[in-house]
Each structure stands twice: as structure tokens, then as C-alpha cells.
Image (tube, rainbow, N blue to C red; front, side, top):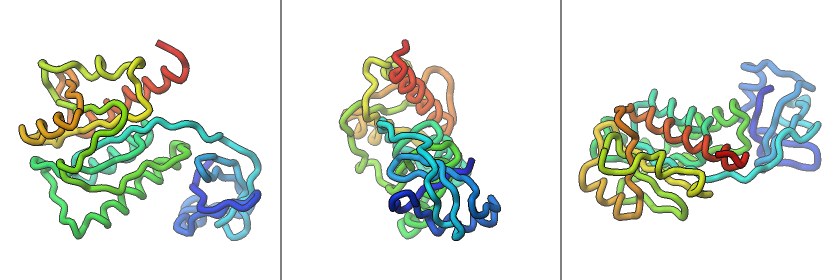
Length: 241
């Protein structure tokens, strides 16, 4: 069943975003009385489309609002193909906020005048990914920053190093015991962090961790860490390990 995000709710009727009309009408070829899932205020409902295809009558609750752990991913600017891959699959794995960082060694450059256009495109990607995986929230992707704008958050703060034998493996740092409501992870660019960038991030209080002996691509690293956190979250919720 196709999911959409509602923009307003009045009694048993939810209004849909006008931007979704083309998808509803021409892509999904839906019509009046077809059932869809609509999320409003982080609660999802099974609904029946009304005649205008932009409003729907609530039939029943599909998924109740649940507490969401915050996973903030500071990701490097990569090629558009890789950015789409990370945003889509990171959303599926539970990332709640993507913050794009312009590192010195980023292979791809972006002019400030193009920031808004890119953020709009990326926001659309995470919205569609949230609909496809039945998330009841949409990750934030509204910042493109420089290294000196990275912020430490309350909770666990981690700096991912590709291969480093002198620091703890990330699986030793991220455990069920220290799993936090907020986890922020800094991922470096394909060309690696400069010494100055690495020191500046560590000075903020980020724990430097290793990903082991395998050299992973930037987009793989992000999904690898997100997968570990997803596993820890599920283990914590189910009282396992």
C-alpha cells in the first residue's frame, strides 16, 4: 500500500500535499475510494481517497507514534549518485538528520548559490524513501556546513576513521550499554580528513573510532555504521544481548 505524508488533519479527514497529486493520479493511477497509508503527526493511518485525490478519510490507525532515537550523520559532499544512495538507504536504516559537510578533500565542489537547490532535491529523496519504508517521520536534510560548524550533541559523538589500529573499533564503542537517545557520527570525505580537521573534530569531544582493516567506500561506511546502530536499537527495544 502506498504511503504519503499529510499536511493537515480535521476530524477524520487528512489533507495531502498538492505536490503528490501527480504521483497519486498519473504514477499510481489511483482513484476515489482506493486505500492508502497517510502519516500525520508521526502517526500513520489507513485511509480511503476522496474524489479530489488530495484528501482521504481515516479508516483506522496503522502505526502509532513511537519514540525515535536521534541519529545525526555528518556526511561529506559526494557525487549526486552517491548522495542519492546514502540519503535513500540511510533513511531506511533510521538516520534522523543528514548534515552535509564541505571538507577540504571533498572531490566535488558546490557553490553557495546552489545550496538551496541541492537541499530541495535531497529533501525530496528522503521524503520518498520514508514513504517507501513506512517511516512515520522524515529525516532532516537542510544544512550544508563547513568543518568548523560541526557541533557536539548531548549523547554519544563519534568520529569515524577508515583504518586506524591505534583507536578502538567502532563495535567496541557502540554497545547496548552506552546506546544513547542521541548519537552523532562524523564521516570523512573520500580523500580523508586533513590533520587540522581531524584535530578540530576531536577537540569538540568526538570519540575517534576505527572501522577495522577493510577499506570501505564513503557511502558504504555510512550505511555500515547506520546498520550497527539499527541493530543496537532493535536489541535495546527487545531486551536482547
